[in-house]
Image (cartoon, rainbow, N blue to C red; front, top):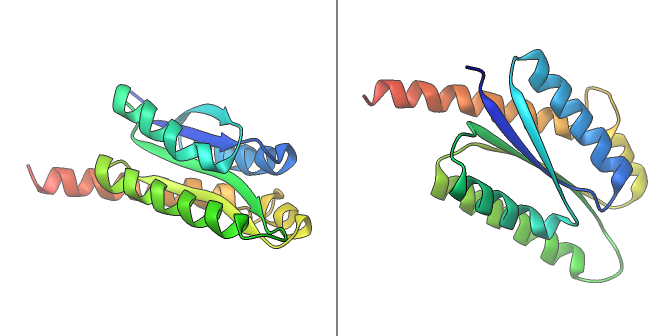
Length: 146
């Protein structure tokens, strides 16, 4: 049976989300991994959704968090960015399920488009690659500890 990965993506910036998701899915498909994608309204909602789903359905071998936060004129950028990263890391450590972190934090839309375009710098692809490597490592560790 193929491994399955959950992608939880914030579609607040729809074009950016699409670019990140498309490259992540393309990479996982090339590596014979099935995916399910769930969209949430913003990056702050990603961790709740991941936690809720993996606590009910433990058949995912990995998860990828995808989103974009663009700096504005207030402290909101720092709050959302920091709490998103912290809460996703907490879930990963608690669940022992690898989570690829594809939430990009940018100063402007130009940076976001650059990091989500279909090129070698696509952060969705990088998050998918990291998740797959950690899934493999997790399998090795599990086998070694039997």
